[in-house]
Length: 390
Image (cartoon, rainbow, N blue to C red; front, side, top):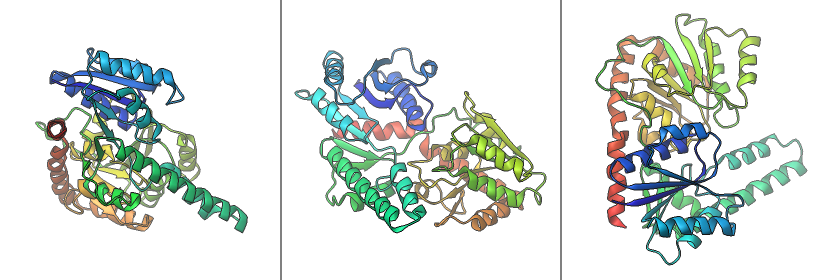
């Protein structure tokens, strides 16, 4: 039995990292561990009901490294005899520094988990976009300088966290080399990869594949800066008239939902449904849908991909991030469109699936089988193997 503490930025909350934290915490608890979660913000306290009652929540304050936080964590670590800390907020490095001050003088081990891509972040992507959009030499030079500074700060932060952690975990095998290339660290014995588990209930007993609707699905934040949901709508705009028996369903809310709805209305694009925020798991949408689309510029893992695959939804994914190549065997259990993004390539891929019922059935079955690699019991084995190595 282990005593475990998760440290995370926002919790309870409905984000991907938060969902994974909930699933891991519940499973550790069911295996007899004592679990604590400490967070700086609590945006959705109602989601606390998804946690096992035995799990204890603790609240920290900003700024991250203030003395009170260190004292609170030190009290938890000593009073609850914490064996392992999961640092779910690797960047900025200040979280790691705070944790290390709190665990000083104990045998408590620190596992830092990077829930993003080692060499990319939303900040970097926005800075790159600013360089491209700069209208004159001065603004372009300033934008380039900012981009350089961001890279320097992020590299140094990652190196600091790696140095001061007992293990550093990335979400994909492909991220290991990306980590080394980006940080310049060639000898990385503390670095390993463990993927995220499926966080929704699975049901492999029932056959959902044969009863699929002709429906393309997106699940996630309505965002045009990183998720690039506009790309999905623009691809559908090419298809909807030719495939009038198909439908596009967009599940989720976000900063650009109204803008996306306006685009659909102004361009007269048919057979599109925006569900808005859905509190319950999107399981029913997975059961019904044939294809899942994701056209993000950046994903750490893309949890919705394996969740959809577990219900036989065929992923059609823009291959902008390394982890997707671990999840999908291209053309066997899903499709990856190559970089740079191309609407034409995306449309061609969708047409190939929409035109061939037999092909969809075959690939959907393969997708379902591949998703089993990410069942919680398989992921938990990897975590316990790591615990034994500490």
